[in-house]
Image 1: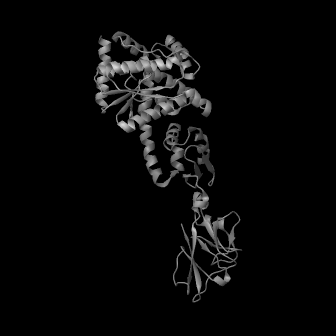
Image 2: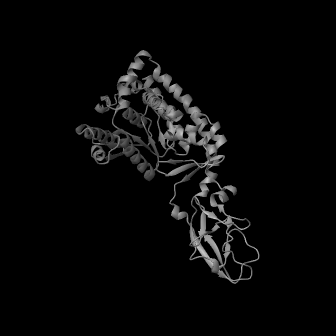
Length: 422
């Protein structure tokens, strides 16, 4: 009984450290989640059970639900169930079965937690951690992946991480707890099940302590990950004000730090090579990012600038035209004053284009708009938003920078004032 007592003691001390008004236990009916539910019940914690019936195993799936309904009734515990026909959903929408099942499950947890408050408790254990580690190692998951799951992550709690699967089974048997065997766990068609049923047992056979060793390494990675997150979050705080990352800073980061930076910026890890190349390329180069947010990274002289992809038409302001008896004595770059008799046709506002030229005041000949912007040291990501005011033939104003001499109003004569409203 000593082991059992140790198990309940652990449950009690774990939840003392993570108090909540109620705990939703994600419960499949398998040994892990039933040991967790029974342990928490024994510790007299305020629990409710949550079960998703995916309908993947026909009668077996319904029997799992029935088993939980019976257990909850006899222990006077509330059960929240959700039924989905996952096969039907996947036939219509495609997708990876395990990935979609996880999405459905977590959406249901969050919906409950948002409406009722409390925390969500998951039955992951040390063997799950070892599987996660090996899968992420094979996929090249970065330190975040190799850190695995943590005991308390926001509203999600995982009290069984210190226990091996065999310990959990032993405790359940000792205490006479019942559970349902999930036959799909013994099928090895998924990479995790293959690892669970074939690879990990072979490793344990040759190295009995390997699961404990992997879990130890993961805890080391977790503390390194915390340090990493802290280091990068200070950089992200600066970034959130300017949307820029200094090239020098980026280049000085270790590979792990770059991976963490991308993770915190919600940039898919697959872009790491492209971002590395961008940091070493010439100004003006762009990497377009896919994902929920459509964004791009632009290489400036000393920084990487990240912005959302925008509909350019929305950036184009409005022309405001006023008639005045004469130009003012003093004026600034926010308005120009034109002689209406020298305007050819009508005035237009548009974005500048490669090859645009104008004849600025104060110089002979003409100048490329691109050179005007370059000389004014306008950043690349701002250049595309640059507007020009034209008549039907010529550019009369590179807005905010340079005025053409071709239709300037003279002192003391009637003129029009032109401004651009953002």
